[in-house]
Image 1 (cartoon, rainbow, N blue to C red):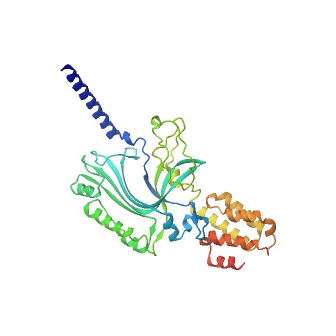
Image 2 (cartoon, one colour):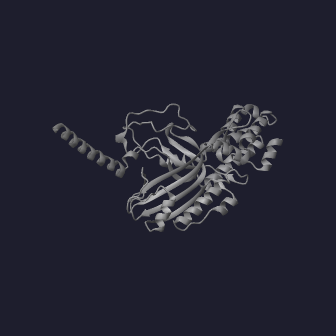
Image 3 (cartoon, helix red, strand yellow):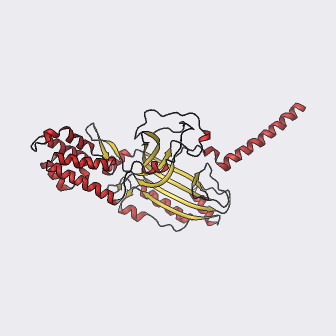
Length: 373
C-alpha cells in the first residue's frame, strides 16, 4: 500500500512539473526558438541571373527580368499556401509562434500567402546563409489587436466573426506580388476594415486574380517573398557542433531542418541580406549609369573598336558585377589581336553572343545593326 501511495505521489508531482513545462513552452514559444521555417518578408524584386535552357540543349546565363513569360513560368515550378502567425512585441519586432489561439490584449500579424515560386540558396562571401522563395503570388495580411483570449486567429473567417462581435480590431492588407495586368488591377478590392464581408470579398478577388496568372496579357515579375535563415541568431546556447552542408551553390534548395551550426561563431542578422540578395545598386541614378556604360560599350562594338569596347566593359564590370556581361568581355579579350582587323569574322561571333544573351536590352535599331554588321 505504501509503495502504491508513493508511486501515485511521484506520478502527481511529475505530472504537475510536466504540465508547468508545457505551459512554459507554449507561453515562451520555446519550441520555436530554433525556428527555421520560411518567414514572409516585404516583396523585393529579384535581380540575379539564372541558367536558362536556350532550347537547343544548352544553358545560357540570363537576368531574371529578361525572361520571357514561358521561361518565367518554367522557373517558378513550385506552389504553396503558407499561413504564418507573428506576435508583435513592444519593440515592434515580430516573433513567429506555434499557436492558433490568441492571448488577451495582444497584437498579431497573420499572413496568408499563395506563392508560385522557386527556392534558391543565398551565398555570402562563399558561405551559405539561408534560402529564399522567389516568385509571384497573392498575400492577405491581417494586423489585429485582441480584446479577448481564445480567438482562433489562424482562420480568417473566425477573425471576421470576432471583429463583428467586438473581440478584436485591426486592418486588412491585400497584396498582389509580381502579377501585372489591367484586369488584375481592376479586380483588387479596397477593404477599409476587418469584418466577414471584407474578408469574403478579398478571398473571392484573390481567387479570380490567381486564375489570371497564365493569361497572355499578364506580365510576371518574380519577387523575394519569404526567407529561411541557416542559423538562429538569438539562441546559440541550444546549438550543437557545426555541420557544414556539402556542395552548396546558388539555386540549390537545402533541407535546413537538420542542419546545426557552431555555437562559438558570431551570428550576424542575415534577414536583410537574404531579402535583398546580391543587389549592389537600386537607385535610378545607378541604373542610368549602368545603362549609359552598356550603351557606350555597344557603340564601340558596333564601330568595331576593340580596345575602347574592352575598356568600357571593364569599367562596367567593376561598377556593376551583379549584371555581368562577362561572355562578351572575355571573347573580346581572348581575340583582341584578331579583332583589331575590323573585317575579321570574329566580330560576327561577338554580335551573336550579344543577340543571344542580351536581346531584351536592345532597341530594334541596335538589333538590326548587329544583324547587318
